[in-house]
Structures are given as C-alpha cells and as structure tokens.
Length: 79
Image 1 (tube, one colour):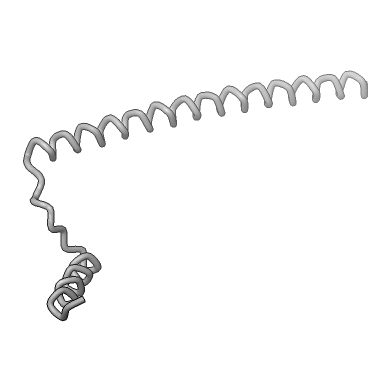
Image 2: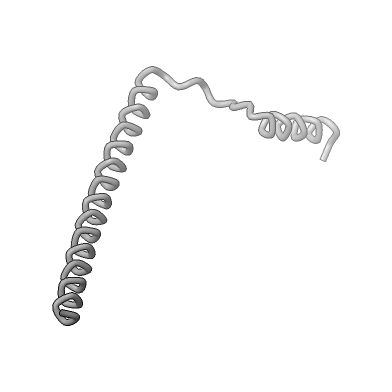
C-alpha cells in the first residue's frame, strides 16, 4: 500500500470513529417517513404493553379468586 492510500485509509478510519457520516443529509420526505415509522412502532409497542398488562391483571384476579376460595374452604373445614 502506498503512503497516500495508507493516509487516506487512516483519514477514513478516523472519520468513521469520530462519527462523521459521509452520506448526504436526509430530505424532508425521508424525515417524515422515519417519523411515521417510529410513530407506528411506538403505537404497536403501546398496544403490546396494554395486552400484556390486561393479561397480567386477569391472571392476578384469577389468582386472588383462587386464594379466596382456598381460604373459605380452609375456614369451613376448621369450623
């Protein structure tokens, strides 16, 4: 590798490590597309969280009912 190529490779490596992006800045249409995609992903995550929360609440209620039934059964046997 020549000195010039080595220097160019070093500069590119430094630029990448420094976070320099050589791509052109996004257009307004690209920014809108990305924003909409993020909004859809957030909405989907909220729906997923709501479903999981509802399932957990249902399981907790069923567990409490079973515990109450066990407590009543135990009290009736003790009496």
